[in-house]
Length: 410
Ligand code: ATP
Ligand code: MG
Image (cartoon, rainbow, N blue to C red):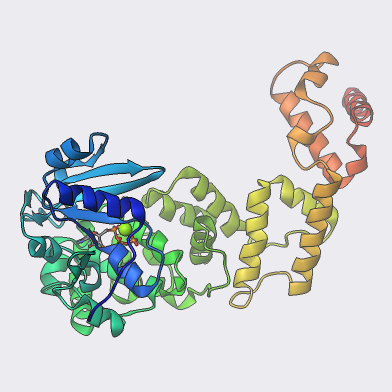
C-alpha cells in the first residue's frame, strides 16, 4: 500500500544532504508510527548507514549525544535531530545495555533490533515506506507485537515490557497474545532494568489518555520490580479516569493517593523522580481527603501551606477523583472554594510570611534578640493575619508584638 508521510523541512534537508554525500537516509521508528497514525510525532529520528564520523564531517556542527551507540544530534533552530547509524545490537548483558553495537550497511538489520513492529518502519521520499515486519498491518489491527520472538526480545531488554503497556495506554491498542504472554513470563527480568528507565515509561503511561491502565503493570506481575512500596498499591482501587490534566505530579498523586503520604514519597524517591514532584505529590496525597477550607480563614490557612500552583492542583485533584473516592466537598463546594480563593488572591490577603507586613528585621529593630524566636513570632503573626487579614499592617502587628511581650513579662 502506498503511503506518503510529510517529513518536516529540516529533517528532509538532513536526509537530502546525506543523499548528496552518497548515503541513503530515512526517518525511522516512533515518528513513522505517529505520522501514519495521524499523531504529532515528538521527534523525528533519522537512520543512515553513514558512520558517526562521516555524519559529523558532513554537517560540521553536531552534538555527540550517544556516540557509542552511533547517534549524533544535528541542531536546526531549537530542534535536535538524532541521526543514528544502522546498527545491530550485540549480546545483552543481564538485559541491560547491549554489550557492543555493531554498525551495518543494511537497513533491515537496523529495523530488526527495534522493539515492536509499529516502531520498526522507516520512510523516505525515494523509497516510500519500508515495512518489513508488518507494522502497518498490526497498526490497522491496533496491535502491539514484538519484532521476532517476544520472549527473546523481552529477555534482551525487559524495559520493552513496560514500553508495550505504555504504548497500549497511549494509543489505545491491544497487546498481541504471544507478546502479552511473553511479557508475563519475562516480567521478573525487569529486576535488571534501571529505576530511571522504569520511571520514564510509567510516567508516560500515566500522562496518556488511559492512565488507569497502569493496572496492567500489576496484572503482568511487574509491580514488585517497580519498587517494593509501589507493589503495596491495591490495583482494584486504582481509578483516576480521564478527567485529570496531564501533569506529572497530579497523575502520580492520583495513582498513589491510597498510600500514606510517606509511602507515596518513598515510591517516587525509589523511582528517582525530581524533588519538586516528590514534595508536591506528598502534599497532594496528604490533603486530598481533608477539607480545603470551610471558611475563608481556613482556606487562607490551606493556601499558606503551599505554592499557588500546588493549591490549584489540589483542587484539580479533588475534582478529578471525586467520582471514585469520597472527598469532603461537593461540586458546589469546590466551585465556592475556587471563587473564594480567587477573591483572596485578588484582595491580596496575606497568605505567606513574604506577604506579612512586618519582617524579622522589624522585630530585631524593635529590640528582639536575633534567633529562633524571631521566626516563631513571625509564624504566630502569620496565624493571626490568616484569621484576620485586616490586621496585616505594620502598626497593628507591632502593637500585637508589644502586647505579647507584656503578657510574657506578666
Ligand atoms: P515516543 O513517542 O515516546 O518517543 P518512540 O517509539 O519514539 O516513542 P523512543 O524511546 O524515542 O520511543 O525510541 C525511538 C525508537 O527506537 C523506537 O521507535 C524504537 O524503534 C527504538 N527503541 C527505543 N527503545 C527501544 C528498546 N528498548 N528496544 C528496542 N528498540 C527501541
Ligand atoms: Mg521518540
